[in-house]
Length: 68
Image 1 (cartoon, rainbow, N blue to C red):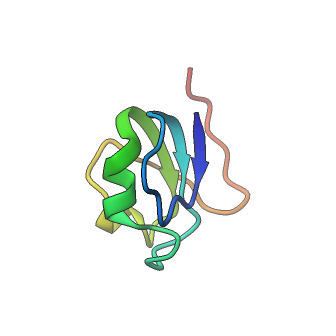
Image 2 (image 1 turned 90 degrees about the vertical axis):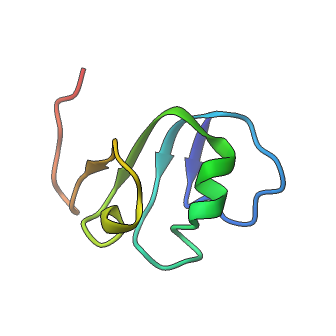
């Protein structure tokens, strides 16, 4: 399951991938992250990464990663 800026979740399937665009609470809701986070890859920018417990991948617009 993939989530993009999860917010206002009542229940949800466990996430494989969560993409967070930035730190604003409607985009980076820590309570909602915890509802679906298990062994989850989280990708966000440098503003939101400060709010989220690791492991988190930080990428900026236009940046690429070669994770396997």
